[in-house]
Image 1 (cartoon, rainbow, N blue to C red):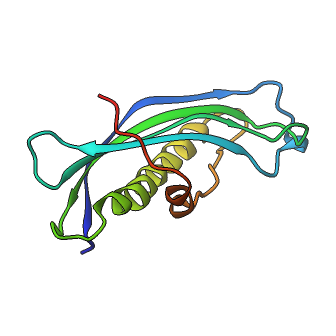
Image 2 (image 1 turned 120 degrees about the vertical axis):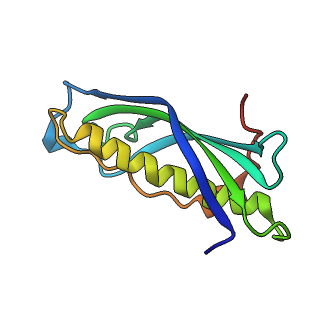
Image 3 (image 1 turned 180 degrees about the vertical axis):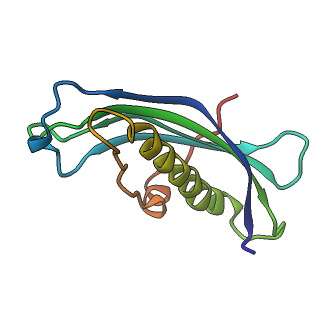
Length: 142
């Protein structure tokens, strides 16, 4: 077992709306994703942390095509750090915690859009290791 365990996760926001202006022959090859993530300790619980991951917008680069759905979500997870002496808990949570939550969201979006008019839509993968190096993650809201 690894040093991080997902205890639970919930979707506090889940939005997928069909884009009826979408033309399947103009599917954008890449997308821009606006992501915000936060983390903080769970009050009163040692080695328990909350990670919040929000995708507020997914859109194609200007002039590259359309997307079949308008998608946004926020997923909140609680994690236990099993190795209390882990040398970099924050990086572990920023990289692995957000990766786990994003994977759960990818699956949920795939299921939701599977019954949509344009068929299932799979979010692209994201390298959260690169994102963790680009900027510090703010504290989790609430």
